[in-house]
Length: 379
Image 1 (tube, rainbow, N blue to C red):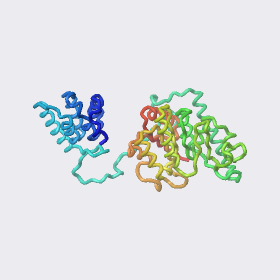
Image 2 (image 1 turned 45 degrees about the vertical axis):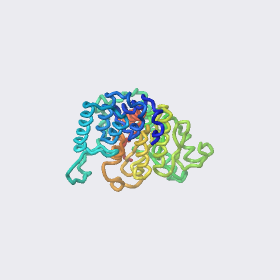
Image 3 (image 1 turned 135 degrees about the vertical axis):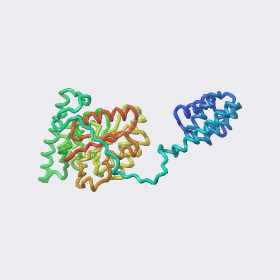
Image 4 (image 1 turned 90 degrees about the vertical axis):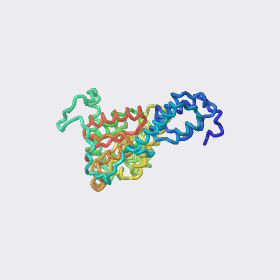
């Protein structure tokens, strides 16, 4: 449609690139390449024409190849006619074995059969340490400097101590709201240690450890929770709704899951800017029941965004046990369904969380693709 009036203005090299992409990269342009040709008909080589026919028929694009033959007005000899005939025969056989519908890659079946989810194996849980704290497989040892391991441990214990004090303040009525991170320290600190300081964080409620790892001070945490005159948010936000532009930590929102679509949008902007940054967004298994989670998964996958979806699955959300929250194989099962690279880790294994997040970040930035991480933990 866009080139019908401009056929004679299309250069030969442009048309050749279209044909090569169909054959080599398996890109289907629809009927457009057939419309590109008038001036270049006599200049198309037999090899290029044959390659286009093969590529088109292998992808089930019979109208496209027929269009090539007509548009090229190619002087076909007996060899060319046989070539096209064999291509048509091969595609007839291929379609008997494999359906070709847009967006699908599947197999035919002549048996009426419904998929039983209980018959599929579960996604395994990646771990580095056994319950005794020993590394199971030496090849999975992150080989961190002792100073960094001590720093990680210090951050986790500091978070635990701050939780105890501020939770008691909330129970005494000194602050209105607080959520602890007991049992989930490794998910936040381990993942924070694995990403770059300039990577953008969209958090939920239990990622205080990420901000603490990035240098947010105890004074700043307490000022925010009390909403005093030293609070950077000027007391406008509820307690634990932290935010820090200096630490690339987007201010937390109260409504669950709103941060996921926002994170995808930010990741898309990073992709456009080609700045080598990625986005990590945290949520719980309860938040995954919200529609925003599924919208975010789909947008991230179809737009190829460098974003890490980090799910803390503690089995209870805020107050709803997982058996009432979802059916199937947890949150990680959503990843393959949306075309995302996925891993499930032991959220209480600091080295497993670190390794998984680091590898996920490298993949997301290099491939411009999203990754779903489900960390199994408890609180």
